[in-house]
Image (tube, rainbow, N blue to C red; front, side, top):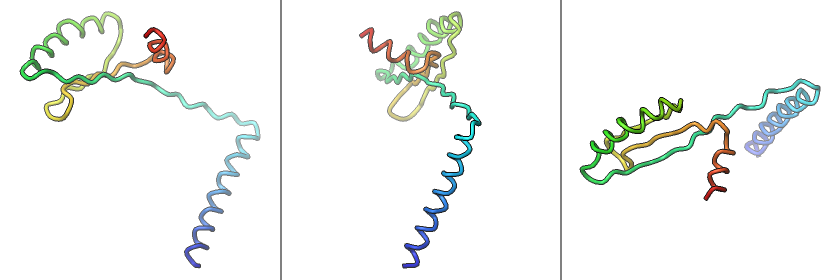
Length: 105
């Protein structure tokens, strides 16, 4: 019985705090909408023995193009684990960029 009363007391405190938060939002003070940054990730597994060739190709061909275009990918090269290479690209248009790619397919 004591446990049930403790839980009910905690729930009532939580509900009072949320009611107070709702009242401040209704009073006319605007809260800033959250600003999200979306990324698109690409995961790559290289064939056995082709890691060095693939990394050389990435750094000699793809990296200079990304710099010219102004894209700043976030790269991860792993020595262990399931994946050998991961790259994340920022989606400046948000999730709409992903939807446009789905429509193109």
